[in-house]
Length: 222
Image 1 (cartoon, one colour):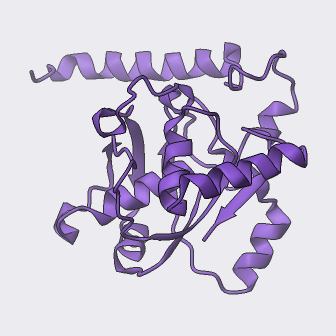
Image 2 (image 1 turned 120 degrees about the horizontal axis):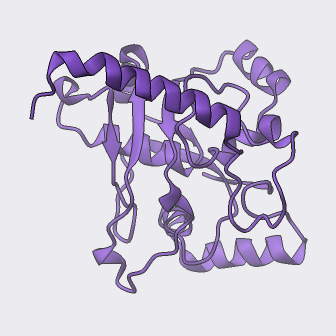
């Protein structure tokens, strides 16, 4: 259904008003397992150093929290090649899987935006180092499109990386330690190629008292 042009200014005004109200009364969306009130410092701590654009995420892409401005600047100075993407993390990130049969899982959608130059970088790269599971899902979503003409710069992905999935682009993954029964833990297990290896790594993390989940330590999978 086409919206009459005369209504558009009203809709745009309402959208801007909602955004303004959200900024004034909204709170940082800490995960439900963090049992405390939001602190003022969370506005800076629960955010990537390279964050841009309007806030539309239900959570931070937490693997990014391990990077400081100094570390990122050094990596750029060392000549790493980067591709920037806008990720709008959905609330489904925290939801436990409801299907015992992983072949029947339907994952929540997450919105994304990718610039033309960065989309081309991803498309032409033979090996991608993904910072976080959401970035991993997005890179794999883009890699499975049929051609460059299909490279949507703005869209949504429901890609579930489960058993028998074959990774197209991502060859290294930096990510936190995830909740049990989550799609993210399944993704890491598939990427590692061994559930027993993942269990061993997580047991090591628990034994050594690593910090888990959003404000936790990182793990590197290659």
